[in-house]
Length: 334
Ligand code: SF4
Figure (cartoon, rainbow, N blue to C red):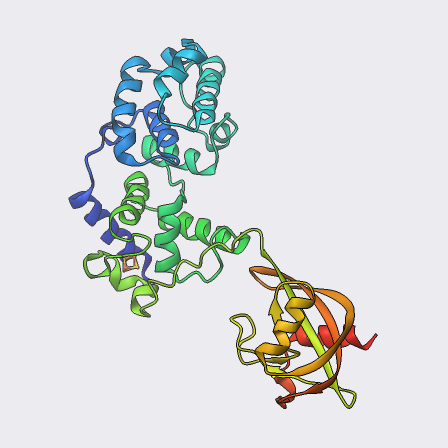
């Protein structure tokens, strides 16, 4: 990618299309700080009136530091996530005590303040101090994931590393604050999650996702945290000592071979597994329970044994047996 072109295109576009927002009319580090904290988890339109009222009531770090927690929370009331307000208050008090009310220019000193993480420190550093400090928020993450076709799922260490690296690279040069805001603005207004407007996007010519028509695939979503627990019953139905195998039509193992299975636990589920595949057999007993973990599911499979099986036996190619089927067959052997 031609980084220079990308930068230039973003800055030109931002100059023409930036929304006029109250915190963009100032470069006071304290005001930038307040706005960034308010904007976390809250929509821009909601924040605007709160920001204006808050800045009227607490126009400086010193004014906020003097206020009681009750007063601060009262001004925050309705914005939600009150921990943010408490942390802001604590951070501002520290700035007043340790730095005479001046937000420190040094990034390490800024990041050591309560409530200031890498993102907020970078926003204050680039916007208020014109320093080449990167930021990655949800909007920036989406834009950069698409522009650079980052394949690692959002939130993974690999994706975090790649995003901060790219953000650190692109911020280098003139007007770092505008550049960061341009990236955020593009993500908020053009490169939106489900309907990116590549047709009017100023950086479409250098966007890997757009060039490869993958803008709807990227970024790769964070995998869901807790896998769903699924109960299943599988029947190892023996005919002359061999287990009947069927081709699965389930969503999980479509096309793979294994002993007949059905959702649920207990003998009814085992009977259903046989009936679904038109197999008749004498169910003997439950011999084991095996666990199998897939990306989004944790399967707990009861293994039932049956004899005198009659019905169709699909003969699989050797590679067509699912891993789970191997586990089930192994469990029934004992
Ligand atoms: S070209 Fe499309 S996918 Fe790429 S940054 Fe622009 S809007 Fe996003």
